[in-house]
Length: 384
Ligand SMILES: [Zn+2]
Image 1 (cartoon, rainbow, N blue to C red):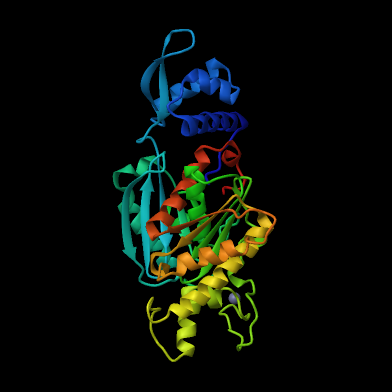
Image 2 (spheres, protein in one colour):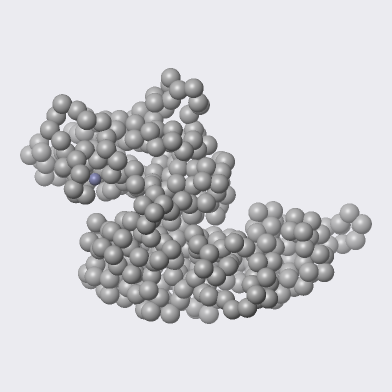
């Protein structure tokens, strides 16, 4: 994110973030309530909200009578003050969305990729962001990027991306030079989790988000924050080892054997069809046994992971192409079954179909979230 100079400016930003966060979570809200919730003096709140209204981050809404019987205007977030862009980068295309301060999508654009080289990908991202942003460029606060792979967000390095065939690519730096905007990069499952956190719609402080598509992934949320792990390696459930069986080991593209990815990802299911001499996509009718095996392993793998963390909720984000046959239903059943004899109740399990736009929106929300968090406004703090 942008570096900000001076401790005075920093304190101002922290206080603005405190005020914005109260309005975001409680709007429409009065200045008096903001003062109580933030611990700031009424005079400070008047000053800060005045400035935020001027810059269109806040707007005055309905009038109420406050406790003293005087008329008071309630405040809510403005829709035209600032915008953030988010991009879902895949091997074939870049899809961009622009969100307003409330996380609402105001425009989208897409652009095919001529190649997956970092330079070409950066050019495509710049083009698609420009198309989506249009006349809002002067009010853009940054760009979030969601891609497949292991991303070390603190250094902006894509450690590994099988889909893009990248290793150790300093893509944040490349993209910031191309865009001339602050950039936040993340794995797509983390970006999606950021969108959920921004919306505040999930239950509790601990959350696991699994992504199921061509590959598998997971986002780990502890105390409301995404955990990164060493080198961005947290959530590496795809390449944990699944059950061993009497059949021949399944080789994974990562070099190991019998990873969950070899059984429960679309890639793994297609590999199984190939072993059967079938060169085609998974068919919900003809391949129900392959889907059932994938679902069983997925459910067990997710439950194993969940039992270590103990989240209140588990969200399973299926790519539209992975919403095949009874895959989601059976994996949910296998997950619940692992809790049947447990001394702890099963977390709330929610299945979602998550398309590229939802991933791009999550990436945009991770940029927008920096406005609402005092901690994240600090230079050098983790921008997650
Ligand atoms: Zn593997």
